[in-house]
Length: 140
Image (cartoon, rainbow, N blue to C red; front, side):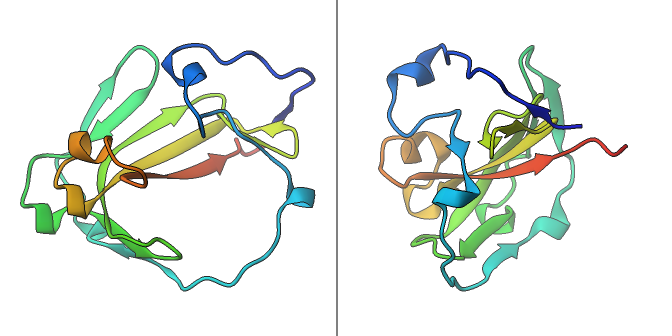
């Protein structure tokens, strides 16, 4: 069940010093509708040998160093580059807020722009990384 947040907590750690960082409060009343081409998902049916690790703060799923061309990718949907999946991790409760509601679980699929070759290289560039967040609620 989602929980309404009465008071926004202070974000700490390295991200507190950055710009465009989490958590992000999202509000439907401040959003607007735009038409975008479809977001395309490639090679997601091939996810095998996923390494699942409890890092102490999250569950992180990484993928074997297979051929770069076989890794899951996204493109389209308004993205100006092609992106390769680097890892998936989870936040519980969710990290972001939608209309003041913090969801029970949030899954982040973290991608890097193909043009930079590796996740580490992509970190050094604007738009080098993109994250798809999926907000989830516990069923009643």
